[in-house]
Image (cartoon, rainbow, N blue to C red; front, side, top):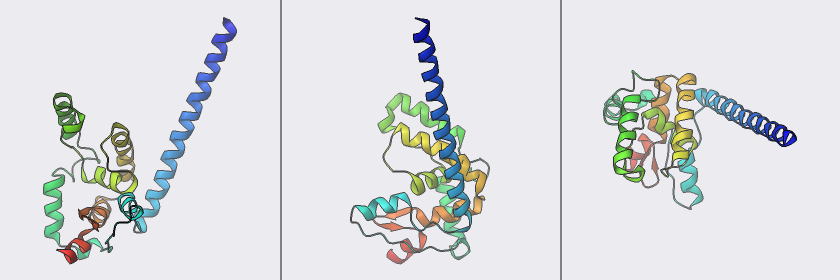
Amino acid sequence: MNELFTSLRVSFFAAARALFGALALFVALTILILFVFRFVDPPMSAVMLRDHWRGARVEQQWTPLEKISPDLVRAVISSEDARFCTHWGIDWREFERALRDAGRRGLDRARGASTLTMQVAKNLFLWTDRSVLRKSLEVAITPLIELVWTKRRILEVYLNIAQWGRGVFGAKAAATRY
């Protein structure tokens, strides 16, 4: 019996070390990619890549923030994330409200609480389906974005990768299309 306990304990610690190593690798790679994207414009987001793989047309032209209307910037902040300038990527007040809503209405019908930074994490790195796994990864990536990028860079990336219609990504493509 003692040998079984020792074997289980060794297996548990080996699994914990492997999990910790995988988590550390995930964080390190994410920070490295974010550091590169702090200075280099992302060529494509995960959402764009998904659409491209599905054979859909993807329209996007990168536009520096200073060439995007300040009125659009203000409109996006006020409609998507009014406390953008005062939080560190996660608006815990809205997150808590969304969790209460999910408890009442169910996860599938709960309202979102994604900040602009969370939307950048999702659109740039993840997928769009609602799931606990995706939201957990989004919550893990968001503080890393806030750590590595400025608020200005977050806005610039958001305004260039947000989907503004079927196959239309970024403010420039939306302005051209509509």
